[in-house]
Length: 598
Image (cartoon, rainbow, N blue to C red; front, side, top):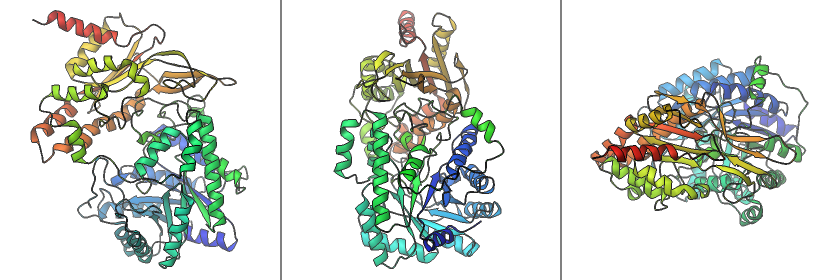
């Protein structure tokens, strides 16, 4: 067990460039087990240390601590554990520090954290900390010199700085003087900004190591969304290079590796002592960059966890599949994609993948969500459920470009079914995700393509929506008649009460045939992943919508909360991608309602 600052000092004395890797806790036990095999592979490259993120308010506390402890004690990786101030009081921080100490962890990354999603302003928890410096001071006051402490740096200014560069550096210096040993920066894509940031820090008297946070580009759409969310400056030459290849996954990934390699070379030539990589629990791009730089210390050996074999068995046939539920949420780029290495545009993560989880590491991004005022301007003040139905319908008509479950307008592939989606929403089937059936489209097709050129892609029709209990009953009654045997569905309410029909396990809804490769099925509807997704899906009713009216409109606030409490989340798959029609079941329901109406 060592302090990371001591390891950095030793590396510098040996004139040796070093690198480190960051991971986040997956959301499922199987994802965690598979992360260990990923750690095992990357451990062979002998990073100087790894760090593991901490969910806001300690939401991943036990998992974070377990991963840190196992990585250090079984795989032999020096480990740094994250801690944030968001939604956590001093007592919980002290408990976490004592647990880390007991597990043999000697390094902490101290962060303030962002506001919870949907909140514009950050507020301290009662009995907690207002700033990262308070957390740094608390660690030193309670544990003296036991822990090495790292803090975050912002080459493009802290999101709350208001553009006050001098104040940013001043606050950073105060954190170092309070006891921080190391600074790791937010991701960036302009090397000049990092070099200038380091120069300002040195001029202000900050002498500790300042390490750049590096994240290779994996997809064009994901990169565009992520840099927008993070308010990251992107030099024009990067956009120019990506534009002609943006629809080819493989070429974009290759460019991401080349760009990050070039950036790292510039940083090392400028005197940067080491590199910190945001791995997102995946290894291929990061390890390729290290190989390109000639920095690999891979000796082909690493200590494995006792259960490595079983973890590998679990991932042999299914690592390259992804559930569809997060497809409209751009945070999925940061936190829920699996197997970007091969098919980054192939939708979203498998519950068994180590990359299936949620990054709550708020030094990576700024909170750039819509304010309450902006959301209220979009959605108005609904008084009854039919008003909410109309808001969803307006989104499908293209009259709104944002819903809590959709951070961008209706996707291009769903435009062909938008009129049917409008009818569903007007009838109270509130759609948040959909795709039409596709029987053999070119993989470079603008609407339906993925995976690069030269392939043929397929997909089953899919629709996901919220609906009242009585509407769910109508759907189940129609399915029970046995006349729609090709349909599968899974459903749950906010309390986790639900079930599934013809969806006992992961069901492929997107697949492709590419030259020289096995059939690829990068999108699945996975009942286990659905159970995890439902927590976020339902929380958006409260955190993104109901909070808009907390103090301004009690009637609207109550309406949205009632829908959260009573509605079901339902996902329907039509397994007949050639001749099926996923909307037939709804048409029958509408016809029956018309027959029985007075």
